[in-house]
Image 1: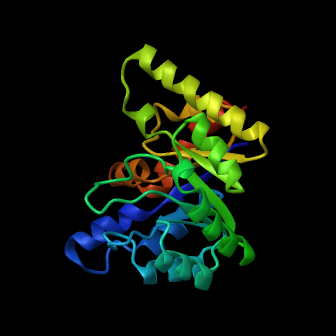
Image 2: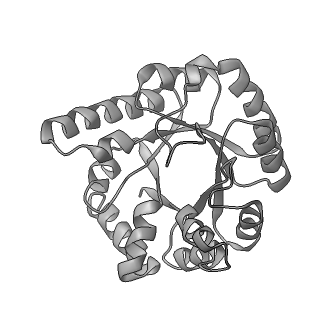
Amino acid sequence: MTRLFVNVDHVATLREARKTLEPDPLKAALLVEKTGVDGITVHLREDRRHIQDEDVRVIHENISTKLNLEMAATEEMVNIALELKPYQVSLVPEKRQEITTEGGLNVSGQISELSGIRDKIKNAGILFSLFVDPDLGQVEASKNVHADSIEINTGHYSELSEPNEIEAELMRIRKAANHASEMGLRVFAGHGLNFDNVAAIAAIPEIEELNIGHFLVAQSVYMGIENAVKKMIRVIRTVQS
């Protein structure tokens, strides 16, 4: 069964709009856990636009599942990860002016730097993952870095509307997932997934874990976060029953 990690970043986005105490990402994470998800994801950005350092600490200390910490490949973030020791660190590209993550890491262009970060993270007993586009070259570079896993960026797939374009992008994702698995990398996926497009990704046998956040937080406005997550779990399971 495909595992589901829920990203609570945008609970913090709503809070930071007023710089107040509500809504609380920890409370959201605890509600999400009640649905039976496998873990919680947070992205501590360099500009602290949503999740704050204290959020990461209290979520890590209070959840009963696993914490996946998304972060940029910077010395500051590495030091934070080494202090907190989450279950997993996922390195993602980050640009200050972007609204959300716009693409995967250029792993092939920074193998030495990422390998150095990988050594520090792994020596602390933390799993090490890289967020990459469905590109075979980036998958192979991730193997060269000796990552434990890759998370395939489904952002472009999620933006498409023409059936032939969707199928072409799905084929890229399938090939990347298969290639990664054959090389011994664990394969995850995420970005932009929703009730309508998640099934095709969950049906890819090599993909064992999904990260979904913004859509579920948005749906919680209409139906509550527990109901939104439960529905997502049902959709995922329809292709695996």
